[in-house]
Image (cartoon, rainbow, N blue to C red; front, side, top):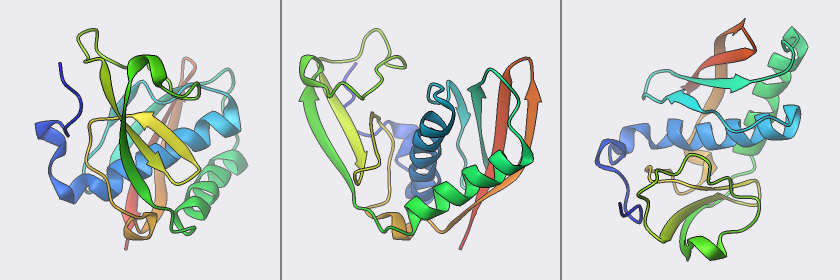
Length: 154
């Protein structure tokens, strides 16, 4: 499977801001909680959700801090760039755990400035200033899984 082009379902530019916000949210969760990136995400233009495996339930203050940190990154107006590299040359900080078994040897990496890098086939904005304001609209905690539901406000 070649992943050097955006997947057909992710070529809709209307979800590019939300998909880029997901990258920032994922890196924020990794940095705040030491968890893995979301293993279950549903990204849509109007609202989205991501699930994270955590050892303990986050406090209301931590939920608010997630939102604050994501918005701080967005306001930095970071460039979002795409690069290609061989699987053997992928930087150590890139988690390849979600790659399908039939992924090609050449991978498409998406960088959000100096904040995040990951292998991805989705469509993204060119700069974080195009995202808008990130807002967590609800969250639930069950059996070690934190589900965050969020939207973007222009």
